[in-house]
Amino acid sequence: MDRLRAELLELRARLDKSFSPDTALNGLPSDVPSTGHCAAAAAIVWKTLGGSLVSTSLNGMSHWFNRVQADDQLLDFDITGDQFGYPAVQIKPAEELYPHTHERSPDELNDETLQRATLLARRAGLSEVAEALEKRRR
Image (cartoon, rainbow, N blue to C red; front, side):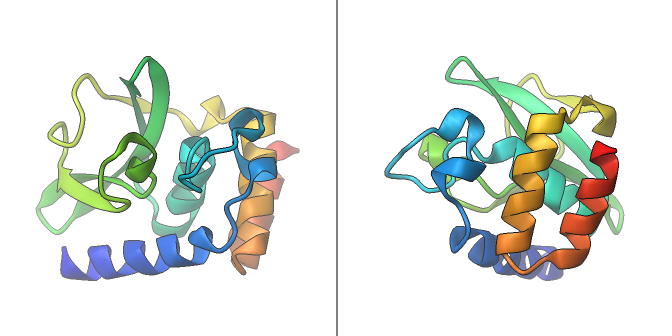
């Protein structure tokens, strides 16, 4: 889990420099740069580390994050939890991070989300991830 945490912290640091209103859902301005970026960030994490896309409802809003098998444990992790007052990077056993979660199909990533994720990945210097996300839009 230490290796996963290190990868997620590095990825979040790259995204921190790239979050902006034009990569946020509906251009949401906020004092917390990750606000409105959960699905785009989850798509980037999914393309980077594999695993599954997962969502729940937080504060009446759909919130996307990721799930991965690490060794013998299924883990949920979120790199945009700070928009809800949680630590920016969280990792817990599946179903313990947030209540009422459900796995999402990558086909549920709509064109708008994929467009934002592609732009965010490019700005973060993740060109291979950006290209893979762009291909999903076609």
